[in-house]
Image (cartoon, rainbow, N blue to C red):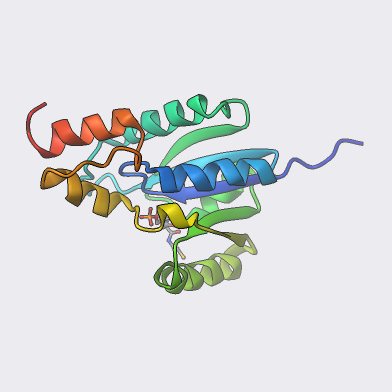
Length: 168
Ligand code: PNS
């Protein structure tokens, strides 16, 4: 008898991916057979990076972490997360929580998703060393000339510098 594959979804905008995101993806991969990193986006809204570039950044970081066999990255436009989970055959969503503000934001979504299809959300406590790291703060720091080395993959840091400081 074949055993059921335990597949989790790590959803987000990933605009761009940070080491905070990657910490959660790596830990989710340790707890499941497969992880789908779902890059969710609205084509009508322009992000900082085109979605294909966001996906490529995550893919290369996942490969660098040696997880290319268990973690795949896919983009989804204008989709409910519960429908993404159903499409990829996942019954668990994994999210990281940096603190109480994240929890307050995530709890109603987790409850709504469970209401819609029964999909469960598992929260992982964010690594305290990355508590201050978010895509939006990283972008602001780069925009005004700060250094985000160690907070995002090096290629993301360089791409942010080129894009947000207009020298690339
Ligand atoms: O990285 P973000 O922006 O915090 O990710 C938020 C995201 C994309 C995971 C969330 O907005 C989401 O799940 N969007 C998909 C649409 C959806 O299902 N909305 C209802 C949630 S209850």
